[in-house]
Length: 376
Image (cartoon, rainbow, N blue to C red):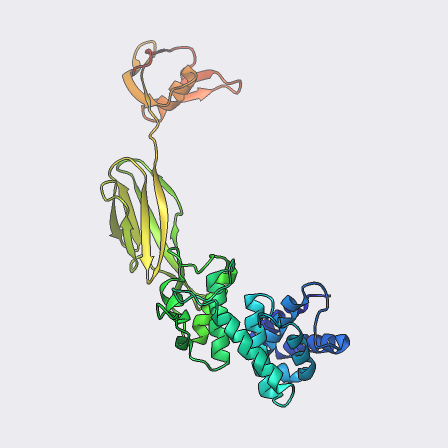
């Protein structure tokens, strides 16, 4: 069977997409599993609390907990509480348990009322004991952003002002931490993984933060890399990926810069940004649109050193090609020299299918030619 936690997540996705029939089918699976287990759980295997508390958290977030056996749900969650510390295993489990008990108590106020209230109070006290000087709230070894976000979500569900949780020395609150210290230099939050970022955004969202549809989430530069020789130019464009799913060309409205103006210059030509290298050495091209930026590194393309070669071609009674110097990569045969020469000089050769020279300007054996020694 599919893990109950994933069934709950799939329910949220279906509901969010407006697939109400499918959402109810998924909800019915969870109802059936709780009925079959008979003890308020959706899963009875190892580390069951990490599955069951997540499911309860989903159910209270979408106000469908009333479709389940709320008394057995309360019994199960209370059974997880540590009588000594007042917590429910780890930090996230404690936050989920406190939120779930609060909503269950609201809908089933007469059932084990005193025990539920004590569990909520002790759970909150244990969480608050983890409040740090910078305003973050986390248990040792946890991701500070994730636990702080869980704290904010819990306080909002319980109707407690987030700013009321102040550190006794610094006065910093969980909101102070999220606004001032949670964000990394690269724009991610906490440990930088998907989970930390989702929790951070969820916390901001529950506090009323909204992202407009035309907000840029990512910017890309095309091409993504470049190698330029001195005086060589390259056209670049910039595209922004917006929160509403659209993409827009922002080449002409974004801010462009290079890390070393002594190595490259920028010129906007029509709808392209033209970068010209003025000296050797790597440099970065940076694009900033709204608050999102993107960089590409431009390396130095080494120009291949050419070899100067003198060619002379004589027919029996006239000169086909006087002494002429051509430049080309170092050849491996005289035939390669003649091939290269005809692209810049006024003569044509043909080659036999066996790979040897057959004619020059239509002449078979009635010519001779010479190639001077390679010159530096």
